[in-house]
Length: 188
Image (tube, rainbow, N blue to C red; front, side):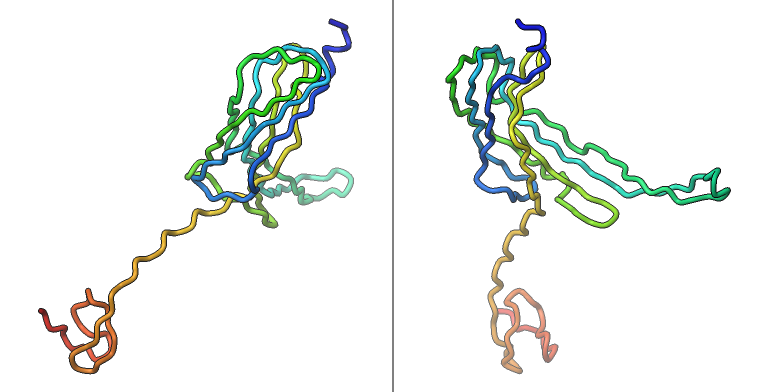
């Protein structure tokens, strides 16, 4: 292998495809990673990398020698809340003209954080396709930003309504008294 080749990514094109970019917490994403190559090399795996990153605005007071007083220093703390590598394929030998689609299933944790973009904090979700190569930089596709939302509440069951024996207003069938006139409901 050429010495300088060790410092270059393989000449491949990786495309991660998903049906949409907005998903509720706890959902499962079915997608495909398409790999096409113009170079021959051995790949250790094809995978998807899912990341959730939280950034928070912080400030501290620092003494400034020139001004001879405390000045406020604002900075951003960053924390990785989720880092998951999802394997789509094991080791394979890739040749010029290679093109293949790898199906992959990604699960968004139900206990995760929803996407947030505020003045003092942000939570971002990213996913991308990767072809891992030993002794060389990994070849990566375009990073897709996901919009993760809170799961929708299940629809409430419809309650049967009955007429009050006294005032004729409607009340839920499971209530013991009328909410309008307060009369007790006659039992059948």
